[in-house]
Amino acid sequence: MNLRTLRAFVEVVRQGGFSQAAQVVFTTQSSVSKSVKGLEDELGTPLLDRIGHRSQLTAAGEVVYRRAQAMLAERDSLIAELDELRELKRGMLRIGLPPIGSHILFAPLFASYRNRYPGIDIRLVEHGSRQLKETLRAGEVDLAALLAPIDPDFEFQDVRVEPLMVLMAWDHPLAGKKTIDLPSLANLPFILFEEGFALNSIILDACERRGFKPTIVARSGQIDFTVGLVAAGLGVAFLPRMIARQYQHAALSHVLLDEPKTDWHMVLAWRRSAYLPLAARTWLKLASEAHANL
Image 1: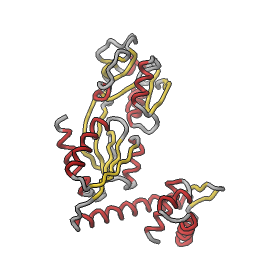
Image 2 (image 1 turned 90 degrees about the horizontal axis):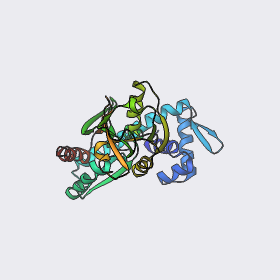
Image 3 (image 1 turned 90 degrees about the vertical axis):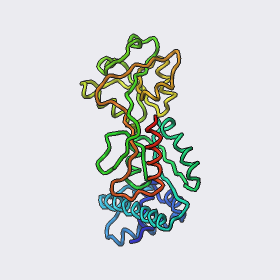
Image 4 (image 1 turned 30 degrees about the horizontal axis):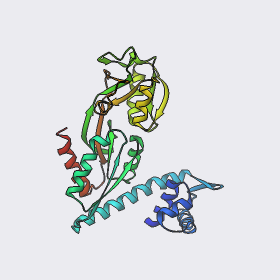
């Protein structure tokens, strides 16, 4: 068993097929197929259940996939640590950021980091918080910006805590209020973000604690479109205060959500057991300095 074979197997699972995996590992489909077959023969058990052109993990495959991810992540950490020992002037920062809030919290930091460390190659991954957790856990990024609460296998550094604002059409009967709680919104249609956005969980969990399940009339991955739906009178939406303030126009009203355990708490997280490269530690230091002044 070698890491190249494990990488081929992992990419077959990640990419959803042998031909797609071959493109990622820069080899032929037949080579990938032989590598996976050789791994199955070595372990003495099928790892993939091949159904036509599709393949799905067997129970043994699930175990090997999970362990292989960890082994490949450790290999990347080893290389990063050795690079630092050689005092290389070049390096790489792999960071995962969510679509919501990054333009305010991290775009200026990118510019500052690039100016100070032009030799560092920044690899950016953008996903909702749920998928970013799995990306971080698999070792595909060094750091990820996530919403609290944070899983115990991660360490983290605080970035920003913001209350949520309820966005509604300007002529809504509740638009004149200074604050509002969730029970007051129970009969209104909700506009949420797409599946995988942790902000949805904050809202839905709070609704469940209040004893109701909201009617969801739309989901979107785009803030601008969500705000447009609210302004058109389709329903109410929720944004962190610092982001909501950027959407000030006549058709829209903002009301502070007065609800326990609904703050938007952004952190930078990393794997507790992983070696954190110097490029990532430097990012954390700059982030701490920058966000202390926000």
